Image 1 (spheres, helix red, strand yellow):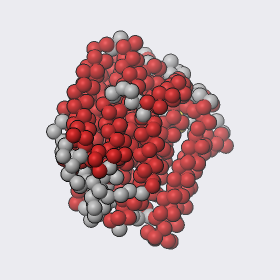
Image 2 (cartoon, rainbow, N blue to C red):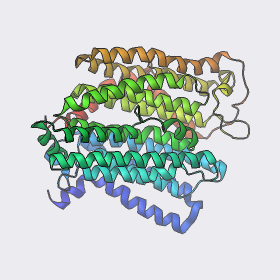
Image 3 (cartoon, helix red, strand yellow):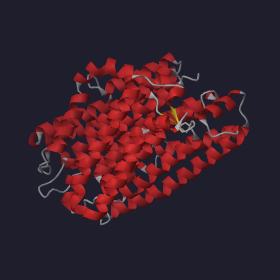
Image 4 (cartoon, rainbow, N blue to C red):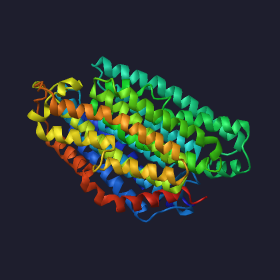
Length: 487
């Protein structure tokens, strides 16, 4: 593998790196007055990176021809699928952030640059085929995320969210690094392909501990139970555009990284990791469903919804099959659309002074005052609940189908039962908006960016989304096949 080929395969990451550095210099010279222009430029860079990435997905790239930098990263179709979701979610964040921070006089030129570097780290995460590259990408993303969580320096909740995220994130990184060191020590390699070959000959107790610690560290990154405790506090305290970012792009990156680690590196040791994944899936579904019931803040409710959805996605991982991996990717694509739509709707909930309205009780009678906004938010809630004919139902359906096909019928049954429980708190929000007496709180107007993103998200999760099932399924199958080419 020559350097020219490696550089060609990682063109998207190089574009993000160079553009981030150039925009950082522009920010240093021009100051915060250039923040909107830098945000527009950052969105353009993300679009260009997506254009460079898409051909690998369409071609179903996999195998030795996608390996770059001596096996450190892989520019295969699986990485391309995840990157496109990451770039889309990051671009959506940059579109809504200027209006939110501008109202507070807190929009700084560094914000879009941090998002770009976070996207760069996430791109490395999903492409990593070596433990060293994995950790570099993870930490690049995490360092940007810690700053983003505490971006509103004048807000005590934002500072608290950043501190909590930093402390617990550092703990999770330490756990993950310890698991990596054990894995390296008992397999003799940091390469995913080498780890897979070493574990094929049998599992030592040290290797089992390595797998367990690595999965624990990754569980924190995806907000899976029992490492979910930071999610509601950080989601509530962080600025809403940052919360939208955390709930979408890093979630996709961490889940895709977990898929590559489990299915590629640990693929031959299914007996060691499958019980852990099954427990995390069931616990996340139940805790996410029950924890959201008593929430009075819409952002905290969406945080528990995120935990709940992670559990459903992990059902696909527990199968350990190509069909399960494909189902996870389909679910992730639909989940990103639902998350972006949900948080854009939350950003549009403003009072007469432009202050955010986050209390669920204050949404009473929203349908009589903001009919379109209430209808779109109701669509998001129904879709998150998995109620047909909205597209969120399809995500759950393909995951449960893969679980049943793999013989994990009890796991699918628990997931279906928990879906019914989870529907309660989604329907509660719809009931408050449509059947309670109007509170008259949500009267503020929003910009065209919010309206456009909400319209696109609502269109995607509407019944019209089913027109994309064949196309989305084929892309997901191509991406999943790249994880199993060594099997």
